Image (cartoon, rainbow, N blue to C red; front, side):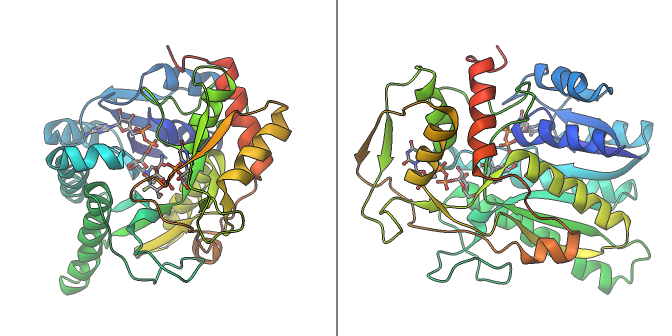
Length: 343
Ligand code: NAD
Ligand code: UFG
């Protein structure tokens, strides 16, 4: 069975290709390489010993999608392709809506024409409204504060409308769409062959810590130690990217086994971890001191969030298996083996 993976050369996509191939699926990757390199896919082939079919193309290119669906028997689509930087989305909102929203519409239209109606979509925990109640469950109020988050929520809403339309039209082949709301993906494949390869200075905590560890960056700035959390630093739900990748395989398998409709599912561990706890885990697991200082809060950050993992267990039989030690160990192994990423 062949799965189309849009954005499959990227960080989460490449790890998902490994898990799909390990589970016996064939993988077809469509990626415009705007934020990735084909080297990641070459390494996926090394890890798995299996081939990946790759086409360089844009998910907004209708003719490209038509040609793929005509030439290949695609069973389901996993849709990672999109832009993901919150700050950049505030500077370039049209680019974000074009890539993330329009791209998803074109994809769904061409899938519908080709009668392929199983889709996994990369959503984000950022679609939740700020909440005093934790953990976040999938039925909690939604609301976003930046164009990136808005683009994810819009696509979720568009896909939810497809379920309504299927019912109204009494469609014989209804959509089955899984909206996976990721919490904070970190880590890398244990081989050290694939991992996160951010452009320039990383925005996210884990790649920043790794680059301090390797000496590319002088010290970590911890954004605030006066939050109402366990130690005053921000709390997030970190999830190992390999667990996250396996969640996509489980979602595809659940849809093949009859999961229908549009289902939003958290992919998180169910537990929060503070910035300091993550830094200290990195230090003790890897035996490296991370130089750091406390600075002011980062604009737009919230104190704490983590997700309930119960619905994922129930609907797609998924839960995390890798703990924080594996996250920091694998992040460091990838960074130390590839100081300049895929270059
Ligand atoms: P990434 O940038 O590494 O991967 C995205 C891939 O999509 C890249 O290879 C890029 O070249 C490709 N791409 C972008 N626009 C495209 C287009 N129009 N057509 C074809 N290919 C295109 O990012 P990632 O961290 O792997 O994230 C994957 C998905 O998960 C994204 O949709 C992102 O918004 C979502 N997500 C990521 C996080 C995170 O923290 N990494 C959290 C929540 C959700
Ligand atoms: N942090 C620091 N120093 C840094 C970077 C981060 O102290 O140099 C702190 C932040 O203040 C926060 C925590 O580390 O408390 C995590 O920050 P990240 O930037 O790694 O992650 P966020 O939770 O802010 O955001 C991430 C993605 C978003 C996505 C969101 C929800 O970057 O795109 O998770 O899924 F929307």
